[in-house]
Image (cartoon, rainbow, N blue to C red; front, side, top):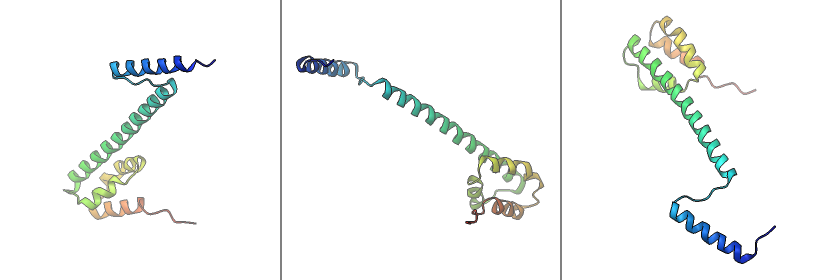
Length: 116
């Protein structure tokens, strides 16, 4: 069922006036679902990034305590590690004798995958 043009126009005018009064645009249920979904996904992504950043900072702190201040290029390599690789590093950091062994460990983890 379609509304006569004059009723539809009147409805649109009233809706516009209402939105302006409330400073709240009308959104459809599908738009609302999309916004909520995007918001949830954004929060989850932020939590994951925060978790990884926290792991990175902890590993860097532990390595600084073990070897003294490690240099920025090594810090950048640590920040390239996946969450799983960071976990692996926390398992072996005490077995590394020096910064050179840390560099070798990082190089072995960050090698580009060979193309077949």
